[in-house]
Amino acid sequence: MVLDDMWTRDAWKSLSAGFPMNEETGSRVLITTRNKEVVSEAHESVYLHPIRPLNDAESWELFKKIVTFGRDNTSIFSTNPFIFTFRINQLSIVRYYVTPFGSDILIPPTDGQLRSLLYFKSDEPWYGKPIRPWFQNFKLLRVLSFEGFRRVVKLPSTIGNLVHLRFFSLKLCNVARFPSSMSKLVCLQTLDLRCFGGFDMKRRHRNLHNVIRHLGQLRHLYLPARGFRAAEKRVLPLATLGNLQTLVNASNYDCRLSDLAGLTNLRKMSIVIVPPEDEMNNVDSETIQFNRLQSLSLESSTEVEVSVRILLSCRNIYKLELAGPIAELPKDLLEYPNLTQIKLYGTSRMDEHIKILEQLPHLKFLWLWYVILENPILVFSKQGFPCLEFLSISWISQLKEWRVEEGAMNCLRRLQVTFCSELKEVPDGLRYIEKLEELAIIMPPEFCSALRKGGKDFDKIKHVASVNLVDISERNKRPDWEQFSSEESTADAV
Image (cartoon, rainbow, N blue to C red; front, side, top):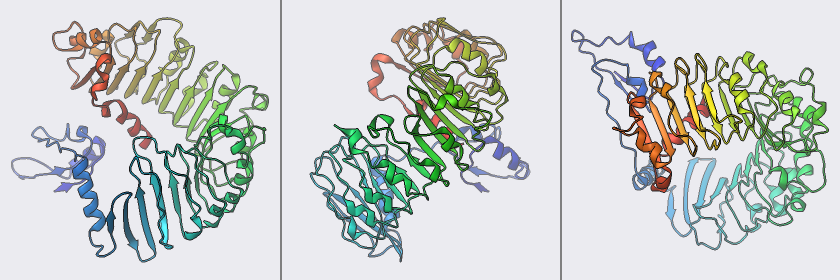
């Protein structure tokens, strides 16, 4: 029996009763999974066979085989710039252009049946010639994406001819202006404008207000950072976007919170609060509610009460990110039924916030980055963080001692501690966390040495199956960065 791509231990437990494995039956079960924990409790005689990931060359060969399989005479491969084309079906042709670093021009395709066109940058910045006005050739285009163009991207007015466009991205591009003809792209569902404008950037983006007004089908809108928006303060007409599900980089600078509250389909929202907060100071969490919001990000440069009021308006979120000072974490968070992920970045008063965080009944993932402590001793109390599975502590310059009392974080599986230069040792309480499976450390040499076999702190972590220690002085030697990033990706996929 083969069970392919099993994700969780619970999934196996629910099925295992139907597959008795003993000498009498002689049953054999083959499980494929990306998570070795799935089979860790499968059976006492389980054999784990790890699969080596493909390297870059092997991955490319596999990709070419997938592209060409069963598509005789429909696939073309050439180089400089590298172009590959394949036909998905009789009505759809997809062509990807990958322009190598050093090439000075983008050669536009000529196929009028093109549906998707994506230009990706290489690892280095691309400084080639500006895009030329050839959009009139692709009136059937559905997907158009540019990424990482450092030289000015001059969008021609003919971009308005792409009336069937559903996805348009200018992420990380230096965009000269948003042509008013973009308002004709009324079928757009995703618009990513997380670009920059170089010198005189605010003047270049003045058409943003008029463009958004006409895009009523938008589901996902990523605005430029507030600093790249128009010089004059004009309220963006977000109230007209009734289908919006994702809104990134909203700001009290040119957005009304009351307009956002009327977007009943909104699931993900990030707000940047800048002084003065006049309009947002009138926010009443009793009358403005984001009942269907699932993910909230708040950023502010000063400690403002409005952050708390917005947070109290979003009681059904499962993911919360707070960047910058915040007056307090409200005790109401204890009653949020779905809150499982929290990231705090540059947050002050951490000594007080930790008392609320460790009581949250459903919290599973927690990131504490650049947070500010008044007391150099951080204490995780007994019975605190009852459901926490992942913890990342990074760049806390004031942290000199971390105490974990016995009974705290009993469910913790993965722990990351990085760049806390004043911290001298891991807490003794780690020895009591029996479920701890992975420990990832980037710290000074003496900190790491104490955790290696024979070191003074090895006894605290000897029960941990996977320990990845990286000296700060050696961090350029390419450690296993998957240990430091995969949990965030996993949490985002929940």
